[in-house]
Image (cartoon, rainbow, N blue to C red):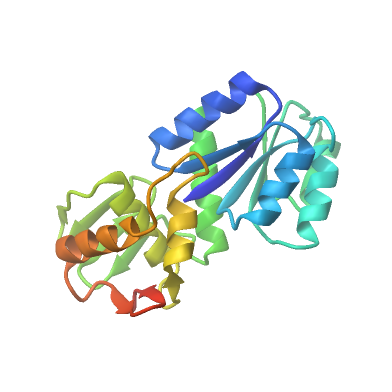
Length: 217
C-alpha cells in the first residue's frame, strides 16, 4: 500500500513515514497544502493522512478540492479535538478522524482498515482457496502453515487480493508498492510476481500478457 502524509511538522512527518515504512507501506510526504493536493491528485494513493492546519492551503480546503476529483480514503490527523471540528471534517469528506497525540499502532490499524473498507474487504482476513491472507498481521498461510514472503512480495499479494477479480496493471503495482524516493526499475514487478507464483502456487495469479495480473476466486 502507498500512502501520502500531508503534515507541516517536519519531524512528525518523518516519524510517521518511518513507522509506516516499518509496517510495510510505501510513504510520500508533503509539508504544505498545495503540494499535498498536487500529490494526492497526481498519484492514486491507497490513503491520505491529512493535517488540518497547513500552510499555503489548509486541510479543509485541500479535502474539499480533492473530493471533487477523487474518493481516496482520507484520515484526518489534528490537534483540534472539538466535536464540531470532527463533524466538519467528516462532513467535508474525511473517512476517519484521529486527534493528536495518538498511538502509532492505532494510526496504522486505522489506515489499514480504511484501505480494506475502500476495497470492499472490511475483514482483515481474506481466504482464497487454501490460502489465508491476514492484512492486519501481514501474514500469508497455506493450509495453516505460514509462508515466508519478503515485504514487497507480501505487498504485492495484498494488493492483488484486495482487488480480487480485477485486472491489476504493472503500473498500478509499481505505483502502489513504491514511493517517490524509490528508484527501482519497473521490471522488478515481474520478478516479484514470479516469486509470489512460486511460493503461493502457479494458479494463485493469472498473467495477462502485456496488461498485468489478476487473482480469481
